Length: 196
Image (tube, rainbow, N blue to C red; front, side, top):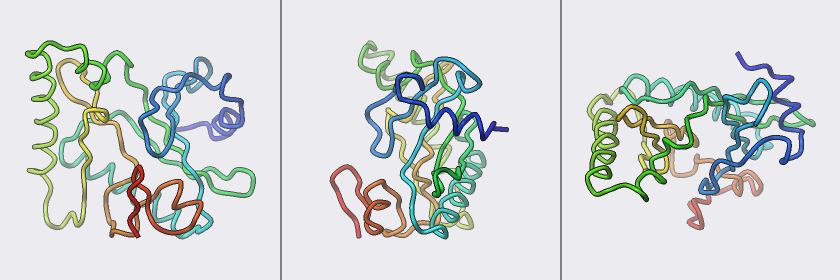
């Protein structure tokens, strides 16, 4: 269970006190891990709010459903909690996730890997991808998966997926979430590619 007051206090703190940014690759946020305090073993991901409370409620439901599908299909992932924090008159989407060892992140490992090591890591990720698609059933509805090497860690020779946002479930081409869409109230920005 997340200590909501401590999390709000952490979010309000300046970036130097919060912790070190883990990745600059994310389209939606820059995840960080606090150096000290009750969240030092967690990664915090803060997203832009939306003015549409119904859309935020749907986003929270979609995230919960997406985590359930990932578990059902055998995709290993760290403990992940999606919250809508009431802060400064708005509801702020926040993910709190158990931190993985930064030395286990697949992308930097691949850069320094030998050919054989790279193939072993790709095979581990491929097994997760195959498990996901092979265990998905028609009654699960529209579900997507974004298995980029930057969304995996390699732990004890197994690939662990950790990117659950945006939740790729119950979507149409207009219901994806980005900070630009949140600001403008329409469309989707996928790193320079807008879908409306």
